[in-house]
Amino acid sequence: MNFTLKIWRQKNRTDKGKLVTYAVSNIPPDASFLEVLDVLNGDLVRKGEEPVAFDHDCREGICGSCGIMIEGRAHGPNRKAATCELRMRSFPDGDTLTVEPWRARPFPVIKDLVVDRSAFDRIMQAGGYVSVKTGQAPDANAIPVPKHHAEEAMDAAACIGCGACVATCPNGSAMLFVAAKVSQLALLPQGHAERKERVERMLAQMDAEGFGSCSNTYACEAECPKQVSVQHIARLNREFVRATAL
Amino acid sequence: MSKPVAFLSSSVGRKMLMALSGLFLCSFLLVHLYINLFLFKQDQGAEFEMYGHFMATYPLIRPLEIGLFAGFLLHGVIGIWLWIMNRRARPVRYSVSRAGDNSTLSSRIMWATGTVVGIFLVIHVNGFFVQSRFITPERPMFEIVREAFTNPWLVAFYLIALAFLAYHLKHGFQSAFQTFGLRYSRYERLIEFVGMLFWLLVPLGFAAMPLYFLWAY
Ligand code: HEM
Ligand code: SF4
Ligand code: FES
Image 1 (cartoon, chains in turn blue, brown):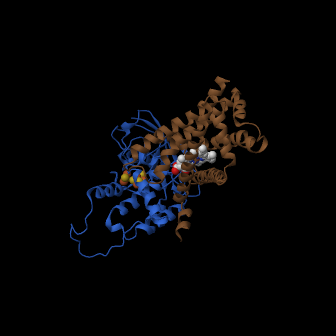
Image 2 (image 1 turned 135 degrees about the horizontal axis):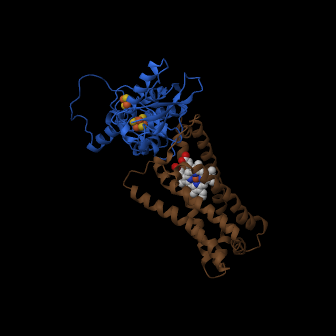
Image 3 (image 1 turned 60 degrees about the vertical axis):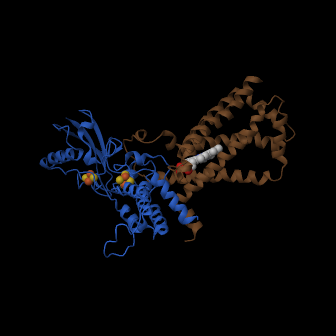
C-alpha cells in the first residue's frame, strides 16, 4: 500500500512548526501505523534527514504513550485501539493522512509528535493514591467488595493515561482521565480514607494545569482506547458534590 | 478551603451552576408555556389577561422576576466564561478535525445556540414585558400579542429562535443531569424520555402561538 503523510514537524518547544509532506510506499496492509513511521524514519535517516520523533513503548496497547492525531481522529479512525494497534488496512490505498500531535495547552509539544504529558503525573500526585500500610497481604475475604463495584473499578482502572480524551475533547478537558482515577478509588474500600480530599485536590490540579471543563459532548468516551465510560464522569461529579456541598 | 469556596473555585462547581440555572430556566419555560396556552381559549384573551394581571400585581411575583433575571444573567455569563476558558485550553488548533465522528453538533455549539436564544430574549422581553409593564400598561396584553403575531416577519423570527432553543435544550436538558451525576442510574431511561418530550414539545408549544395568531387573525 502507498500513502501520503502530512506530518507535523517541530524542532523544539519554541519552534513554530509546520506540516511536511512525505510519501511512503510498499507498506504491508497488516503493518501498524507506528511501523509506517519506522519505515519513513529509516528512509529519512538514510537520506541524512532528521527522523520524525514520536512516543511509543509497549506497541501492544497497554502503555498509553503512542498518542497521535491521525486525520482528525485520536489514535486514528478505529475505536477501542491505540495508534500501535491501528493497522494500515483501515485506510484506502493511496490515502493522504494528516498526522498531528495532541493539541492542548497543558500538553506542550516537545518535538514533532511528542508532547509533554507530565500534567497527568501532577494530577496523580495530587491525589491519585491510597495511604495504606504495607505489610502482609490481608485475608482475601477480610474486606468485602461487591462484585459490581469490583467490575466497575476494573473498568476505570483500564485507563492507560494516553491523553486521547484530552486530545479529542473540543474543550481540551481531562475529565475522563481524572474521572477514571477518582472513580476507581471511590469504588473500593481502600480508597475511602482520602475520598473527599482526593476529588478536590485532583480537580484543583486539573484546573491549575489549564485543562478545559467538561461540556458533556462524550467525544472522550468515543475515542478512549480502553472504552472508559462517561458514567465515571457522572460519579466524579457526585464525588465532588459529596466533598464540597454536603 | 471552606466548602462553598471549594465548590465555586472548581470548574466542576461552575458547571453545576450552569446546570442548576439551566434547569431553573427550564422550569420557567414550563410556567410560561402553561399561561400562554390560555391564548388559545376562545374568550378574546379574558382568562389570559387575568393571569397577566396577577403577574403584574401579586407582590410575591416581584422576587421571582428578579430571580429569573438573575438566573438568565448567571447562566449566560458563566456559559460564555466557560466557553472562553475552554477555547484557551487549545491555543493551537488541529489542521484536520473530524469532531462529527465522535460527538453531536448540538453538544459542540451550545455557546452559539445559547447566544441566539439570549439575543432573542432581549428582543422578546422588550417587545412584550417592557411594553406592557412600563410603556403602555393600559393596553391589554392580548392586543400586543395579536399585533405582534400578525406580522409574518416577526413570526418567522420567533420560529427560527425557537428552533435554536430546541437545539439548545436537545443537548442541555440531559447534559444537566449528567453534570449532577444522575445519568447512568436507575433514572437514565426516565431522564432520556422526559428530555425528549421537553426539547420537542416545549418549543413546539411556543411555536404554535404565533402560527395560530397568523392564521386566525
Ligand atoms: C430559556 C433559555 C435557556 C435555557 C432553558 C437553557 C438551558 C440550558 C441547560 C439545561 C444547559 C445544560 C447545562 C449542563 O450542561 O449542565 C445549558 C447549557 C448552556 N447554556 Fe443555556 N439555556 C438557556 C439560555 C442560554 C443563554 C441565553 C445562553 C447565553 C450565552 C446560554 C448558554 C449556554 C452554554 C454556553 C451552555 C453550555 C455550558 C457547558 O456545557 O459548559 N444558554 N443551557
Ligand atoms: S480515559 Fe481513556 S482516553 Fe483518557 S487517558 Fe485514560 S485511556 Fe486514555
Ligand atoms: S505503544 Fe503502548 S499503547 Fe501504543
